[in-house]
Image (cartoon, rainbow, N blue to C red):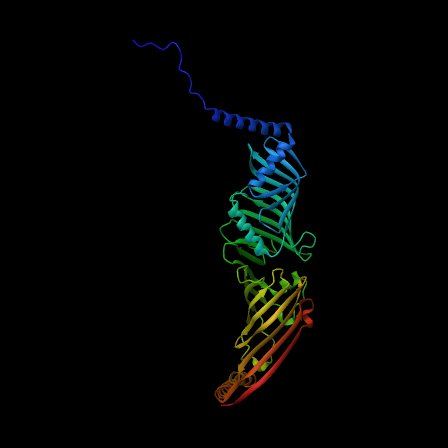
Length: 412
């Protein structure tokens, strides 16, 4: 019969190296625990700054209050590694902890400054995300003021509540001011996959008179603005502008698409615009009713715009009303919320159609139809039209519109 040994077997010996590692971890944990629990401020400050640096964040702060599960920073200032022209500061910032890992941020009265141009900031943020994946992947809430341009003299200011979930999801609800003028409510939502949705003029996207989509995944980035069908009177009233008598009661809708950045941008953003004005056609004499017909006018443009929106250089603007078509270059120079518009538009009307239209204005019935046919068959050449516009949106009723007509008609 087997018997148990008189003595128990010796436990396996731990290597000296393993014992040293375990001892170091225990000492470090104890030190951090004592630092947080007993207020060992140099150790806590070192840990906070180290955690920020490991995420690519340059963080400084004036003071802090450590407790179990939370650290509150006061006078905090932060920048992101490699992202020039973007900074943030907050008088109060709380970091919730799970052990020593940050799990959530809450900030009060954040002031963020974002320099122009926008494409450089967005490209730098994308590079930061690639270099530090997950660095900003924390739920966060903050009431924030965003100064776009500079803190001292911003040209766009956003004020409101920003909320961020885990990952790339987030939202903003607040107001926007442009050149010191409050433009009303502004909201935004983004998820990192679809284009960010932005709306202006209402608290919900569905009710907003202006809706934007910013696609930062496209190369180059693309901003699309949509104006749903809106009465011209309402638009003018919102901006305290006067409306010419012939435009009252008309409605307008359309889109503007702008590419932001790219290798060929050369400091400018390229764009296209397409609008339709319903219930309005350009003023014209009765004799052109057969040319300028219908009840709507289509407006279009291809252009370049400076990043600060100070100047739009239009390479080609178009005006289409029935068979009347004009096209030409122009400029729009912004002065605050107002703008000075200068355009030169050229067009040509076939003499045959012009003659038929003139006949139709004065002769009805069968005889009129016969004479219109004669005009179409017998007249050749064209009438060239040039329209020059010089307008200030602050004094739209004083706009100068000069028309020059060159007749080149003859019998066939």
